[in-house]
Length: 264
Ligand code: PEP
Ligand code: MN
Image (cartoon, rainbow, N blue to C red):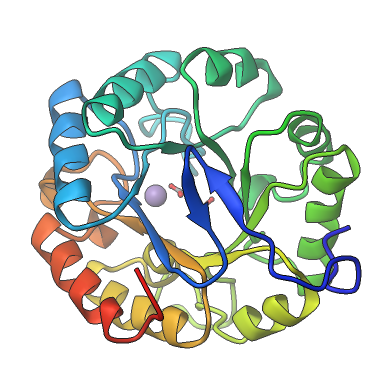
């Protein structure tokens, strides 16, 4: 179902009224995690001020250490929804457990993110395949293109064809940066599937200063959008502080992208 041979035209996925895919580039921006109402209110204002039309933020966080902040859970969804509603922004947030799906409905989450660590959590994929909410499927950090495509097929096979691929960097021998952004995956995915392909430059480089260059490369290579971590005050971020760009940097990046993309 996800193969280009199944559907020749590019598929456009609607996230709360914002179209992802086709001739525009959409930038989904926001903090790694939902921290406080004030932080999310400010972030939402900054997302809109930069010209972005979709917001990200994690309420359920897949942290490497069990002692790190795990996210506020359902309370985080409530905070996020309230902040985004004030700016009329659709929201994107990560789902880690099928038991949270009722809360995702209650707070009207517009798009479900499946993180790199859950790309092959097949029961989770089957569950999001049974509903019609758009799913942003991140690439497993060590997943091949074929494995990634098959994971999307799990979702599509259940009846949910609203899928967006997100390249977020893969593990290699290199240790200088957090992951290696696989730019090659962009034209390959565009050839293999009719679904939108976006790129997360934040988790790829792992450092804020790398984000603009990786974002420009992704859009130049044909990405339909970006998922970028932006925090009102990056050095105070509770999670992924090193890679969060400032509101001013997001603003500058949007200006640069307008020179590369067909339309933003
Ligand atoms: C995130 O987007 O905050 C995240 C945890 O991403 P990934 O699953 O790509 O590590
Ligand atoms: Mn993060």
